[in-house]
Image: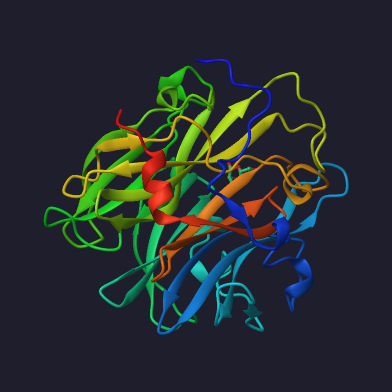
Length: 334
Ligand code: BMA
């Protein structure tokens, strides 16, 4: 595995909204909240909708967060958000004693219906859940993967006659007992039964990762292919305290890739450099886990502006943008 540069920088095509100030943080939440991050964002019924992760109640000694749940916020412009009065989804609402936490939501609208992908920690492993919601008050769970799998994202339309998802299984035993996790894809006739699973992008293909990669924001269609943003992690064992915990040795960057329009399991373009690397104060200082950029939403506006929503340092939710053509042009053939 390649040695990763100690210093990584964001692509010049990226502009951070408001100098990197968060669009949503704990102060905006009308109920108990500590860290607000890793949101899924989409446009639904004429407004922007965000489903965000809320971790709260850190253990005073270990800083382990005793609670995790999902909340909802709405916006008219994608920048100023109003948060609903109560949480959207908690582990209790899953009505399954095995479920411990729900987190890391992603949203995709397919044929006018909003789907939610989310991670489900259970007493018997981590699963990827897929649910639908019509009102952001009730959800119907359509499928839950076998463990361990998460970071699922749905494509917004069928390709080659099938629904598609990207996903990130994490098979520790067969990969030497350490993180070496890749992006896979699966297809489905009905969003419930998944198969045709294949490897899409491997960690060693990403020069700024030596640990693991995973799907981030759900892909968007462009003329040249499905544009998708992923996260890429490098680890450096010499890193020490980098947040609230005793040590945090990983760094998360955003990357960008282009997938074949008819066969989205195939990568046709990849940027060899990070799209967003941790740089601003919110990204590198004072967060729960510093140096984490974790995108979960990508919205392309009619004028070509691509809004990229990302969790910063597992603590706040931020927004960056770039022109969609610039993102596509960063993706060079493999
Ligand atoms: C991953 C996930 C993400 C989180 C990241 C950094 O394993 O839990 O939700 O942002 O770690 O802590």
